[in-house]
Image (cartoon, rainbow, N blue to C red):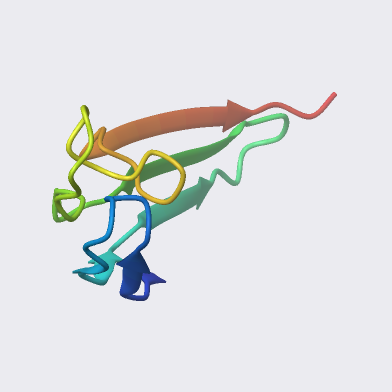
Length: 82
């Protein structure tokens, strides 16, 4: 789990607005095959629950220095040893 605490937006003029906290879930599964010279396979997801970043009064609608707007992302990788 990744937790970003709430904070005060001090960039929106004189209105010190509270920005909500955010919790995202990342997960991965590693598969180590028993065969000789077999790769180690990893499968995972970032922001598994597809949480949107809290709204902020900017052109993009989110705080690009704190939050990630890309949503759910999947990945896979293979590790070969020689």
